[in-house]
Length: 91
Image 1 (tube, rainbow, N blue to C red):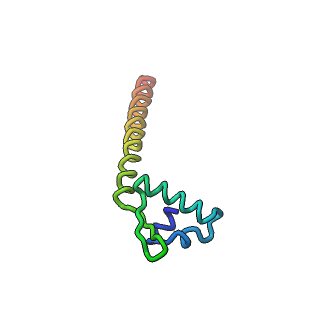
Image 2: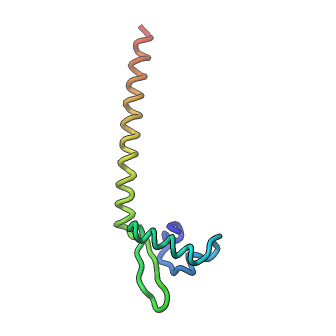
Image 3: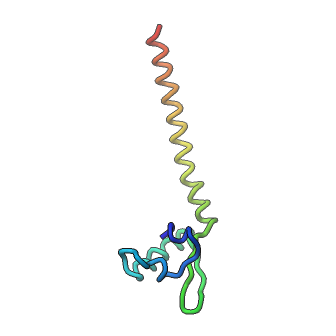
């Protein structure tokens, strides 16, 4: 759904078109994404138009980046540790 919304704002019917789930299921997923702050919506007549919320996506990216930073730090520490061990075996 986020991939479809990345192309631009869409109504539920447009998002659901071609997906292997019902429109009510798509609506439920959009509700969860909205509660998580990843999408927003506005009324357009009888339809609701959904779009990605860049603020929510930015917050998600920052949250994920903390794991990436931790993983890189751990990787660098392991490389240094094994590098030190390799240095010791050469002598």
